[in-house]
Image (cartoon, rainbow, N blue to C red):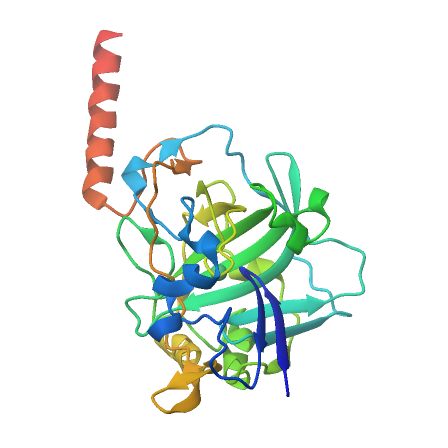
Length: 326
Ligand SMILES: [Zn+2]
């Protein structure tokens, strides 16, 4: 009896899968299609049927301003650790960027007075350039969403942090399509080029050191949405404080292509066992169930230009009335 044990800890997910040579045993397996797809995750992972699940559709004009949502304070996001090993790996569900560091210097962020340490960064994409992000912004998809995963320093490590409602902080960043960007003169060039070197589940490749700040839009620390949710993959733990960035990065169509070539774990296809092709890895949006979405910005600056115009017009009228009558 040969048993294969796959143990993967990744950004948004902690997956332990034990595969026996008895193919009737699929306990714990999950994927993005067929009978192990998102609709069925809760069979083996009951938390995926919880009431505070992620991702969600963020309705910009319904987000509630909250003045306790102070700017993120980053530490060592811009630091390049030249003595550390930076790598990409395909864990069968996504590509993870990680680093093995001997340094005692921590990387992460401070939010609302709490220290969250960097744990990993990974990607979500879709079958074509019009879909792929897990969160939606006023019903709009983006072709790529990056998740930068952190755990609360007080809880010691990522696994332990999953037991607490404030244990994990995931910073989600949308990437929009822009084919005019110069992919050869881009701080993420080496990262995107190396996606092709981790085609199969389990592949790992070293990359040039890259600061985490390269994945984040400039001047974006004070404008974000926040809500309480979950990991978007099994075990779907409801332990995530989500920060979804309002400013958006750019990615080209050619950079996106490589993601769709990736392969996942083996699963049954008709009569044979083949790797899942990861043409997409975005979980469908989940119900809010009464949860509130908050914004750090005290006025709506969303994608709806008509609302922005209305707000601007009201402001001008108010200013005029104020100047005449007050
Ligand atoms: Zn994720």
